[in-house]
Amino acid sequence: MPVDVDAVVLFNRRLSEDYNVVAVAAPEIALQAKPGQFVMIKRTGGAPLLRRPFSVFALAGDEVGQVTGFSLLNKRVGVTTRMLFGLRPGDRLRCLGPMGRPFSMAEPPQRAWMIAGGVGLAPFASLAAALRERRIETTLFYGGRSTGDLFHLDTFEQLGVSLQLTTDDGTRGEHGKVTVPL
Image 1 (cartoon, rainbow, N blue to C red):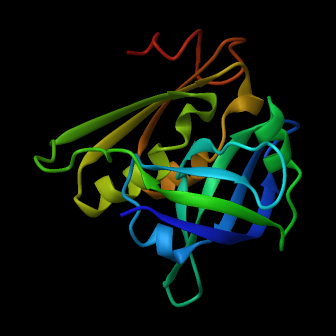
Image 2: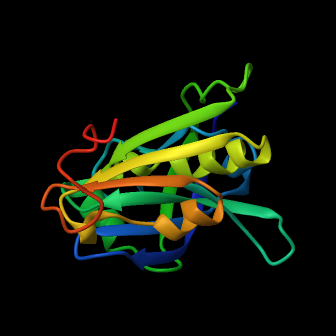
């Protein structure tokens, strides 16, 4: 059941000139969130008026493994994404979630493929963790414009995910779109 919370920003980690990961303290949402779900967010007391959807990237926890919140993968392109890019620890966001239909795990496959480019990577960190728990062999096909647009590769490697990388300019992995190795 979705809940509406006033969440505190825990950190804002810059990944590049335009990409960042923002973590918020919202255990009420994080404890319910399943891989593939999203949250609707807006700045507390600020513009824009309407909330925008963001995939839950990963769950955040404390030193003893208690779930304390979640993170969002963001690319600065519009009003809301620019606002997310500029957040600081202690800032607040209104978060409504979890929303949407999660990835189906009713009949787990023997092998899983995840295919993403850019911020399309956002729902796959939590999915990769869930697949690892079920010991499902997983491959991530991930593409970007250049090496600098490929993020969190170590996260997926630590989860035992096989990486098939592509870049439009050929600086990492296969040259071309992510569909090339498929």
